[in-house]
Image (cartoon, rainbow, N blue to C red; front, side, top):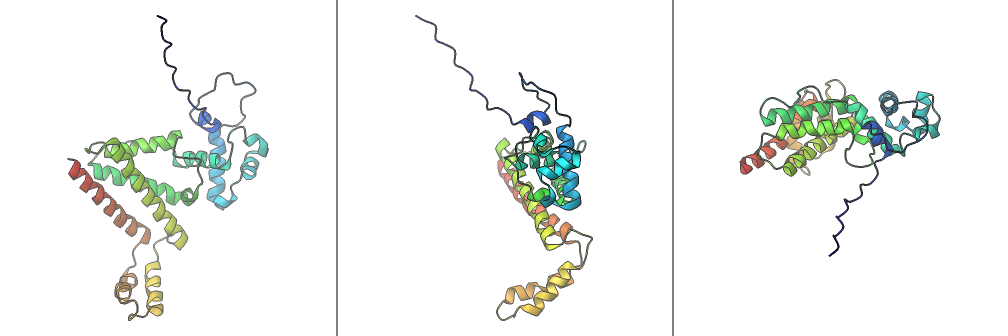
Length: 250
């Protein structure tokens, strides 16, 4: 009887050029001169532009001009502005701080990870509004994912539960930064809460909104850093929930 042919391994989809460059993977058979700039230089120029002038100032043309390149030459590195966004995110995040989530109880590690992400988003607020080509696949993004999983590794949670927990934490941190940016709460600690409470008191009728009216006094009395206070409160809620899941799994 004839020997059956061995099954063929499924063909892998080709990697986008920007991922090949970030991971230093040179495709076989590639011809032509090597790019004159590194993909990291492209990302750094875009990050600098976004830091100075905001995300709306970042375009293929503007980034090319920052580097003294033509717009068309930039397409040798990235195929779209979304891919450029992924490169920007990788450069802005950078590698994880040494041993960020190596020590302490899982909750201490997870909070350290969340606060480090919050610090990066606060340093580069445009991060929370980036348009990306898909889930994280760049080296530094995966490095941060590894650190986050390491924070939860001592728990009995499954790998899927650990990744899902990180997704929730990351989503909360980004939404918190986005809200603070839009409300103007990202500067030095101010009396924003007090001003909000005072305006509420002028506008709402206690007979129509009795519960909000009773609660709004807390705003007028609060002169703390809104960003830090609400970040601590929100992370506490999330980590309490993950802790309950850990207890059930254990």
